Length: 395
Image (cartoon, rainbow, N blue to C red; front, side, top):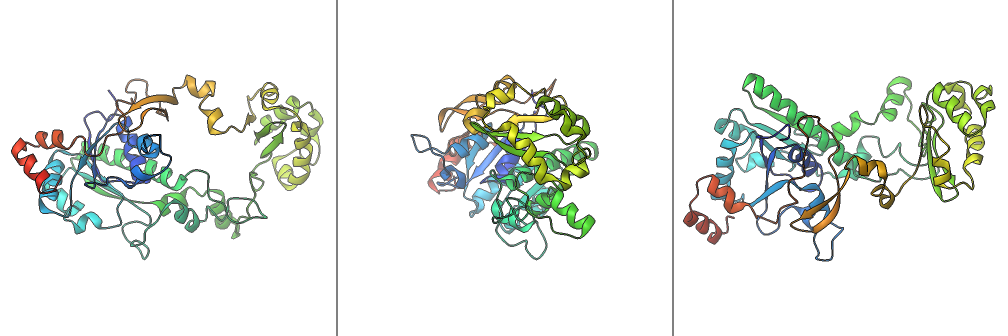
């Protein structure tokens, strides 16, 4: 039994930010009913990569543990189904453009008259109000508008998008946090509420160094590649004989240990490098001194040399190496799922480990609309009524 066992979520989300929010709720026990467009479904059902059957791995990974109901929300009978679900639900989550559900008569203002305890969370690019609130947004757009992209990459190249859609995933996690916090408030007070989660807000709050540099010094942080030379050093990636190795010796204990491990004790007391501030000021010389050690050595050789008590030192792994990583395997972070769409495939596991109420992968992603009839019967629709909705192309 997960910590959210017994919680019901009506999930209008699609693409990534919203499904990432709701898959976390589902993994930890919530019943997530995914409302999809009749005939098409979530847009990420068409996103690459596909398996041999043409099914989306993207959809399968971020929609496990969910049920799927297809409803035409442009029709009154379809909206009536949602209202009946809302009577029983605890949470409604969407990532449509701001105000889209309200235009259909399914916004928080309408739903709270049906269920005063309901929590309605909306994930959008720019939020529910403000001059940009009507604009569409995807991860790369938001990374560009909040300062993250401009501060990412190397100084002699253009701005760099992150290798994963951090704007989507981080916003999804913030939304899941907000929902569970609001749910706790509801348990204490009996009051539901509306939650406005903007990707741009979330990512601005996470820009960290770029925001602080401007806040403290009134300056724009220059791109610095893999370094962190405005804050701490050494913090970088070094080429070795068969790939790359990451180093983060950001405190004095870590710096001393690192120097001992590479057999260069003298570097620790070198006047150019004996404080973090000096190491940052002399980052070029520091990089040259350290880089020589890694040249020609394999990742395996290097991994055996470092103690890793105070300094973080580890090989840079690709996805193929990560899914075989003994530590990740020991923590059940690489699992095999028997999925209704994909069949058996390798997926990421559940990251947070609860002692008494652990999350679980109970089922794979749903086929489009596979739970529609079952859910309608729970709402006390008869077989005849369900057949009529099918004939009228409502479901």
